[in-house]
Length: 138
Image 1 (tube, rainbow, N blue to C red):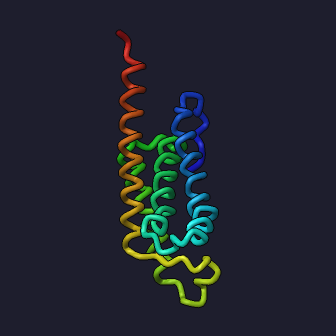
Image 2: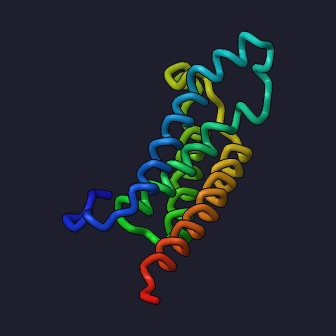
Image 3: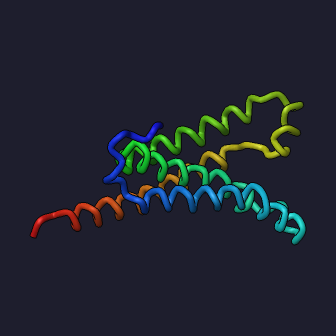
């Protein structure tokens, strides 16, 4: 996933989408969880799967930016990555859970990753269409 040498024609909005997703991912695994725990929302399902959603969003945008993946392949890569990381978390020995902040993985995390990639693909398809229309000679 290295940047190609010819990166002058890259869409900076894809990078912005990836960076915003990364910030939201960091927020959802740190400050948002701390706030939710303090506010009594620790068992909120949405807060539990938010990191997977934002991870898939971020990775889809990064794939579209860094290697110029098509929107559908970027979303497929993102979904596969989130699913793989959740499977790895499921098979890790119990004693390692403390090292991972006691976050548990389940099928809903995979589903949230797929939804995050699906949301990203909609935006990526829209952006690709906008770029194509603006580059057409009239």
